[in-house]
Structures are given as structure tokens and as C-alpha cells.
Image (cartoon, rainbow, N blue to C red; front, side, top):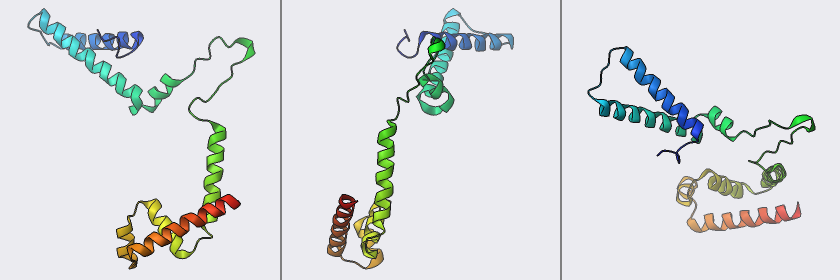
Length: 159
């Protein structure tokens, strides 16, 4: 019934844990009214363990997430195993980081007003907020922002 929620081994673990919890409660003196009461209580505990496991696998537990996404190296033998990071393309990351550093260096060549506008845009500040703070008109903001973008594009193309 719950096969779609977890792997078979995880479902078995959840069921075992729920059963042990119920046995511990019975040993402490808890009683149940009927077989149906026992079945319902067991199902609730089981579903609770299933939901806990799903939360752990979805990112709440970094350790469980890492273990779930880990590649199995068994059977590599003497030939060794080639380990590939499926989450990232190293070349792409290096190129993007280089481009970001270059952009940061080139931004130093902008005028003070241009740096102010680009910085405010990057920080999420709106046009109205910057204009109110600096006493600019919306038209001045628009022109300075346009010139800043054009200049940065030209500097990046030349770099």
C-alpha cells in the first residue's frame, strides 16, 4: 500500500520501528481496546516513521541526503572506480567564477553614480528607494543604469 513512498528496506525499517515502539508502550502498561485499535495505532506509528524518513531524505538531514545520493563503489575490484560528481560540471563552474571575478574587476572602472545604481540593483533596492535616498529623478536613474550596463557590456567584450 505504501510502496510508492519509500524503498522496501526503508518501509521494513519504519514498520519494525513502529512495532518496537508499540511493544515498549505495552510493556509500560498501555492497553488497547480491540484488535482494530492495535491495527490503527500501528498504522499511525508506521506512517509517522515513513514521513520522518521522507523528510530526512528530502534534505532535512544532510547526512541522510548525502548517504541516499552516494554512489556505490562495491565491485570496483582492482581496476578502481571512477568517481564523477553528477551534481556539478566543474568546467562550467570555473568559467562562471572567472567571469564573475572579471565582472567585479571591471565594475571598478564605472563612475560613482553607475556603481551606485548597479549596486542598488544587485542588492534588490528599487528605483523609487534609490531616488528617494539620493534625490534623483526616475529619468536620471534610468539613464545612469542604462549607461552602466552598456559600459559593463563593452568592458566585458574587450576583456
